[in-house]
Image 1 (cartoon, rainbow over the protein chains, first blue to last red):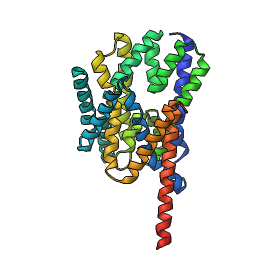
Image 2 (cartoon, rainbow over the protein chains, first blue to last red):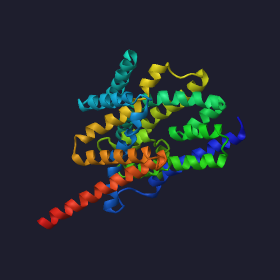
Image 3 (cartoon, rainbow over the protein chains, first blue to last red):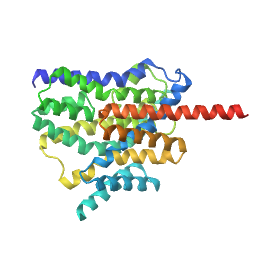
Image 4 (cartoon, rainbow over the protein chains, first blue to last red):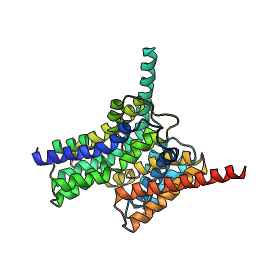
Length: 101
Length: 241
């Protein structure tokens, strides 16, 4: 291994770990002002929205591919399926689509 | 007593591992491609594995490869990694609010495994989040990421193209599968997700912010705005009484 690359990787590891770890060590939880606690409770759902869009539309040059994947995932999960079923079902729908197109 | 506690953490660990399976599937194509790209960028298999083991952050690892290919210096690459991954601070702060009390050292240990995906799964889970659950969840996701990075490098090829393409939807489908059941619970969740999606789409399409910052900014804007609206509504109903 080249030592410069190894040092780079170690540096990347350290700067990635620090933001992951700090909040758990700095805060005990539930001691922040009520408004801030409310905001932090909102974060998961807002993050999910931002993680899905617009990324899902751009998984393929063909934008309909992403649209179809999104529609499949939304419909399958709306029907109450488990997350794994949503994942496998969406993959299956897109496999069929690329098989026929 | 200690036996009961041990049993409880055992089931929690298993529950976490089960919840990690979708992430493990979703990481497969992404990690394979990372291993392949690392090889073409000139990294050895040892360096590739070390990066997946030590950094464990998909987007940052991909970016570092393209920067290496451009001949960017070590310092800039480490700085870019920091900027791309600073969003985890927000996720850890949020997860800390629903995690069970534990020694800081234990929390610091499972904090290593916080990614967009493990955070999303743990954060929308019912009830509190225990250390056992986090370790189980992290283990499956981490193993998938590290092992498939190595295989991608060793085999030097990704999945057959159509399969690779259809599998690229996996992580997004997982996010949808986590979000939709929560949306049924209330209109607040719908607003949070839709607002953040609109903000992120605008930031991305206009190229106003880089990916990492776009997600953090969109998330924070949406979370704060919705909380302000809720607060104002509560105040108004109180005044009316």
